[in-house]
Amino acid sequence: MDNTINLLNRKKIIKCPTCGKEAKNNSLPFCSPHCSHIDLGKWFNGTYSVPTFEDPDGSEIIRLNDEE
Ligand SMILES: [Zn+2]
Image (tube, rainbow, N blue to C red; front, side):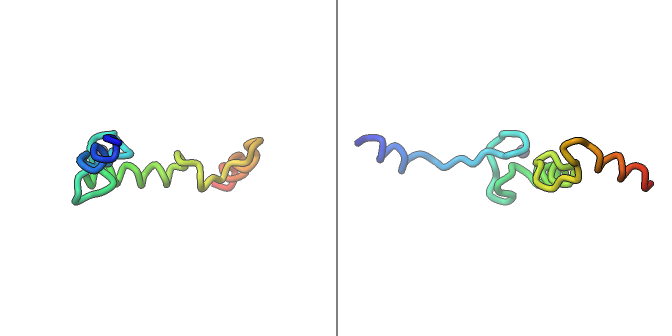
């Protein structure tokens, strides 16, 4: 029963996905614009693995390199 009160009283803390620090209101969900940019960079670099040009066997990467 007391858990409900504790949840209400507890401040909701959002951790910065980039560095894990507490996020600030002016740059949520990141602690700073700097970390926001870092996160964007991860997306572009494919770190989050959603946009990928890589075939499971790697043949696609080899073909892209040959085109340069
Ligand atoms: Zn951060």
